[in-house]
Amino acid sequence: MLNVQNLTKRYKRGDSSFAALDDVSLTLGGGEFAVISGHSGSGKSTLLNIIAGLLPADSGVVELDGKVITGLADNEISRIRNGQIGFIPQGHSVLANLTVLENICLPRWLYGNADGGGDYALSLLDGMGAANLAHQYPAQLSGGELRRVSVARALLGKPKLIIADEPTSDLDAGNAAAVMGLFAAAAKGGAAVLVVAHSEAGLDGVDCRRLQMSGGSLV
Amino acid sequence: MSKSLTLNKIALRNITRRYARSLFLGGLVALLAFVLTGGSLLVSSLRSGTESMAARLGADALIVPAGYERSAEGALLRGEPSSFYLEPDLAERLSQVEGIAQVSPQLFIASMNSEHCDAIVQFIGFDPDTDFVVKPWLSQLLSGGLPKGQIVIGSRIDGKPGQELNFFGRKYTVAAKLEETGMGFDTSVFTDLETSRIALADYISFGGENAPPDADGVASVLTVNIRQGYDSNQFSRNVNYGFRKEGVGVVFPKTMISNVSGNLASLIGVTVALMVLLWVLAAGVLTVLFSVTVNERKREFGVYRALGAPQRYLSRLILTESLAVSAAGAVIGTALITLVYFLFSDLIGLSIDAPYLRPAGGVTALVITGGFALSLVIGPLAAAYSAGKIGRIATYAIMREGE
Ligand SMILES: Nc1ncnc2c1ncn2[C@@H]1O[C@H](COP(=O)(O)OP(=O)(O)OP(=O)(O)O)[C@@H](O)[C@H]1O
Ligand SMILES: [Mg+2]
Image (cartoon, rainbow over all chains, first blue to last red; front, top):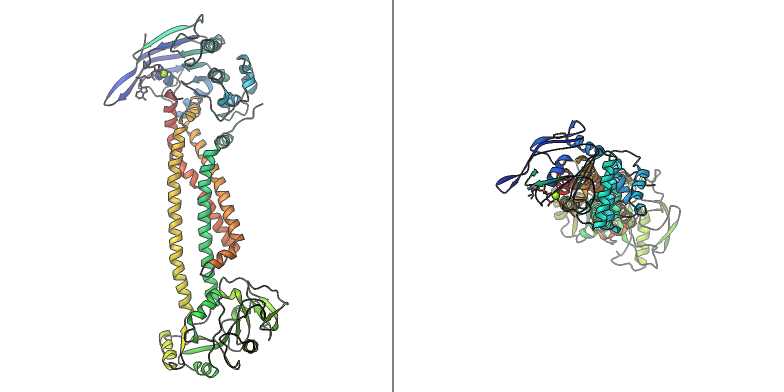
């Protein structure tokens, strides 16, 4: 499903440059759930953002479902990210001016799809025990609830690939376990899931492949 | 069920959910629209006032008693009533001055206080046989000419055709009412010379200020057309030297008008320069404001990127938001100034010491539309810089651990 080959990314820092990603390769099949951990600054976010097509790589290739997606024009890669990748960026990512339900349906509306998949969105919320939040604005939600909203939003389009950058970083153990459980379930449903997690929070007893990142390399 | 949110609806939501910010930006545009449209309306009203005056002061020169040059100007420009006279035989001799092609006497009488007069006006008598100043525009009003003993009243005078108005204790029938001229004629009453001499006799009998001993043959000014090619300075000298003893003065309405329009030209220049400056300033301030707010919202825009919005979606979102805010401001600002302009036009005209006349409806509409359009485009123009940069900024912001 996901095939990453020899990704390299260098950042400039002052006059010198250093490799944030150094020849990273990774394959992930449909139904596989992989968790990357590693020290801060080891290059985890850089890797995920390149896979999601937000950041260009210096060299290397990202293949999704057999199609090379590195080096595409913004329009093309954006459409692929919208339709085939469920991307949960690091930090908060629920839009304050839209209700919970609108946040979840937004990816479909972005491409003029009048059917935002509202029924499915509601059933996703329901499955998370958050159906009552559908018409709330995010300002009224807790951190754990917000995180579930962003997960539901990533799941809405039934993407082939789900990428989440530290989705449990600011959650308590119970909420972290709940969120990781959602990813595990999505993997069971056939998606390839790649999650970055700083800690072990929520991973107790979760069946997943563990990867370690250090100094720009997967070890 | 949640209704589908198009880009336009999202823009609207962003505006209404952040109303303080939107009110501030919209208010700025409204202020701009108000000032721009107001300034343009003022300029065009002054211009049409001057044009109307030039069209109605069709004499090359006015001969008046010495010392009354300014009174004559005040009466014509601003409708300040005054009474002054040339002796009958003086008028007769003046009309023989070298250089004159056409001459016609007029009699000016200032109305008296309420007891004897229905309105404060400048009473003007013209000689239907020789007149070349009043009749050209009067004939558009009264094709058969002004019946003897009747009056034509200025637009600001209360009264309708057919009604009778009292001046100096005598009733006069209103034959017609002038349309607005923006000058002294708006508070003037016109009648034939003979009738005006009857009015003058009444004025004398009531002990009117600055009255001549006798109304017979009296005139206040001689309207003069100078012979084609004759030097107007030479004409002026002929009058001044030839009648040094008697004391007469010459007023050139065209100089008067060109003085007014000269002052007006600089006033218009300053106004236009200020408006351009204001527009540029507003565009600059708005550019900075949009850039600051877009920078504040870069994480928000980054989320759209993460969800698969292409860069041009964000540019369109920003331009749409700025256009909507700008449109609301422009509508409110232009509507307000239009209201003020039509409600207080008379007051504005009176407080300005220059011919002021509301231009034709088409011109007014054009000016208002122009002010509206200039205010409308300023939002998207000022946001264009931010809209162009947002794709990169937003992508970068979502990759960083933003809050
Ligand atoms: N735009 C950039 N310019 C320069 N250096 C950058 C840039 N983005 C990231 N870096 C650096 O690259 C390295 C990897 O960053 P990255 O965000 O991928 O780390 P991370 O593993 O996600 O860290 P964290 O766990 O703190 O989120 C870090 O040293 C970071 O400072
Ligand atoms: Mg990171």
